[in-house]
Length: 299
Image (cartoon, rainbow, N blue to C red; front, side):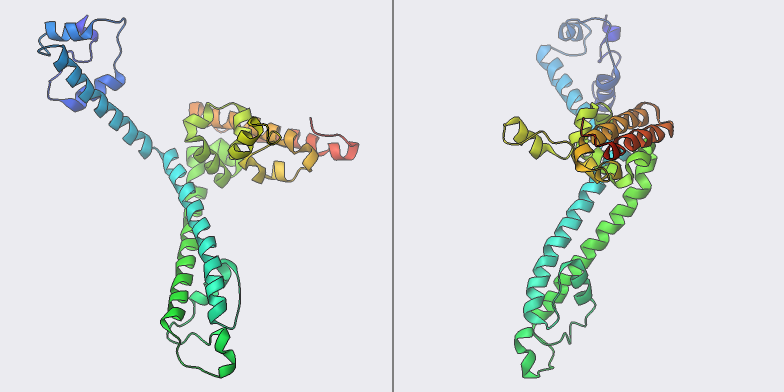
């Protein structure tokens, strides 16, 4: 019976080996493992057995977490979240640059492009504040001006970092989930992986859940009775949904989510490329969009 035990023939001080046994081992039937450990001389008593088991279990958990975080799909999860963070912060700071810059310089503007324009200026001679434009002054401006330009450069740096992350996502997603990336596009596929928590989690979700990923707030409002059921989440950005008239978007979203769910499962469990999925989706979406000619509505 002790042959099936995680502690069988194990050096008591080898915690890494014990962790591997905990993760990979199995027994044919339950047993009184503490008593068997004491009988075999592995532990002095039951308390010592549980101390060793706790240490091995914690080590096994840390090893599993480390492997999961190092997995390629998890790198995509981090990348798409970082990209969104960079883009959001760039846009928020760009608003501040526009407000601040508008009070300092004659030229007004908005958004990241205005920040990009300001970032190219020489901080030693940045122009004339709008409030002093009639005074004819051409002296180099104050530290406040230089801070505006420095902030504008931070906006540009964040926006460029978001672009670099997007490029990484574009090239990496097809390697992780080829069918999902081909059908959804690399960025949307990475967003779905991020929202689901990884490829394995996405592959195990039903198509109805895939359909509303990213619409959790609307879904919870619906469950409270405060709003109608959402027809789609982040998959709205896909042409198959966005390019379909509003009355039929629910049907298009269901069709797309069904194929995306299958693609995720193929990528996780098989990995072979299935171009037929895209052909089936195209045929279904074409049929849905053709309803406009016949006056049909959403299913």
